[in-house]
Length: 137
Image (cartoon, rainbow, N blue to C red; front, side, top):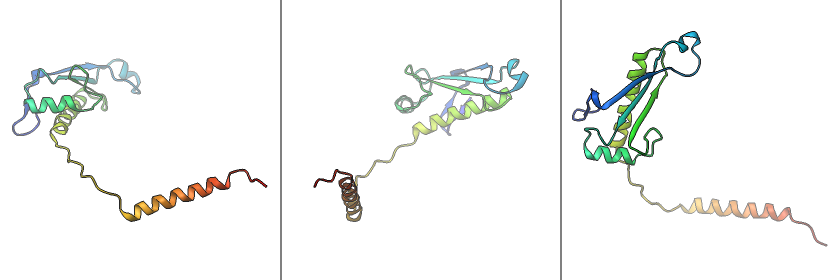
C-alpha cells in the first residue's frame, strides 16, 4: 500500500515490482545479485480517482508509456529494499506532481526600456555588419 495523501492510497496489488540485475559498476556483486527494481503501474486499471488518471495520462513524462503504464527503474542503491523504497517514492512524486495545478500565464507587454534596448541592439548589429561590406571607390 502506497499512501499519496490522506484520501489517496494505491493498493499494493496494483503496483507490479520485479527485481533485475543493476547496470554499471559494482564489482563481482553486480553479476550475482538482482538489486535493481523495475516498477510498473497501470494508470488506466488503477483505483485512482478519474481526475488523477486524466492528469497523469496528460503528463509529458518519458516514464509514462503510450499505453498508460508508469515504468520506473531504480538502481541507485546496492540493496534491494532501498531501491524498492526509492521506486515507490518516485511513483508517489509522479502522482503528486500530476495533482498540482499549473498557474495560468498572465500576458504582459514589454517595458519601454526593454524595447529601447532591443532596438539599440539591432541598430548596433546593423552598423557592425555594414562595416564588413566591401568598400567601393
